[in-house]
Amino acid sequence: MSENFESDSPAVPISSDERLMAALAHGSVVVSFFGPAAPMLIWVFQRRKSSYVAFHALQAMGYQMLAFWVGAAAYLLFFVLLMAVVMPALAIFAQKENSAIGMLLFEGSFFLSFFGFMAVYFLVGIVGAIFSLMGKDFKVPFLGKWLARYLGRGEEPLAPLDETKSEQWAAGVCHGSAILLIWGIFTPLIAWLAEKDKSPRLRFQSMQAFVYQLLAAVAYFGYMFVYMFMFMGLFVVVLFRPRLGDMHDNSLLLLVILVFIGIMTLFFLFFMLVIPLYHLFAMIAGIRTVQGREYRYPLLGNFLMRRFGDKPGG
Image 1: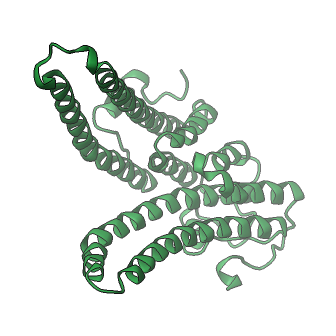
Image 2: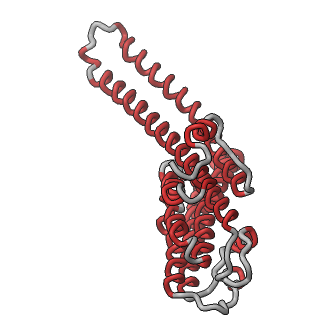
Image 3: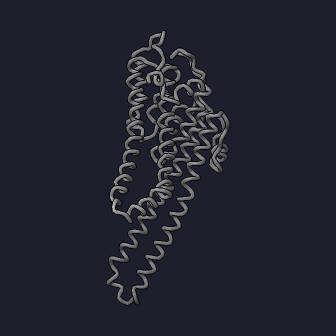
């Protein structure tokens, strides 16, 4: 199993500071619900100092971001199976004496899959941190070796990385952090603040990803504000309904309830359409950026390009 995680001990010794920074990048999995911001922060400050730390930071941020996408896809598949297979099966079980067993199996499989996935997710990051502290060249299963080839990394852990590919990967992670919605904005923000005067490509793509995710967060809070405002309005009408004695058959209350339900239904349907598109555009942006192709979000990308252009500063 160890061959999936590490290579041989490096011929050139790795400093204790480098081992510590690499371990922090992998160990940041415990705070990755804020997005892969911690390994991004390590990368922007270490990329020109240590190729070893840079590789492990890029690997950690990619692992944390991709794990959330894989997890989201897995739970979406679970929901589809739930509606298509499990619910009809439970309906059949309910007509028999062993309905309690069927419900227990369903609940058990759900909690086992959820906590099992999270346990593996954290375990890989923690193992990476331990191996890095030991001076081992840790590689995440499936991702690590592929990323090393993508970055043009040699056999030695201290071998230099392709700077263009490194920036493309970091930009792809910036776009991919959209899977976390509100918390994802920290990753592209860090990349933009640190690299805006050094890397034109990363400057534009990180800024574009940050603005895209920020607009989504504003829209989300706007939706919640409208929802709470209308809910409070409905609550006030219900609370003071006894004072509306001249209203025949509670027609005002019924009208308010119908309007509330109608507007909330429209908002819900709108968000059910927008949310998949939001993630789809982010996924396309991440893939195309990693491939080295230019990507601009519809409307937003062209606006930012006209406003800021390709210049590294300003």
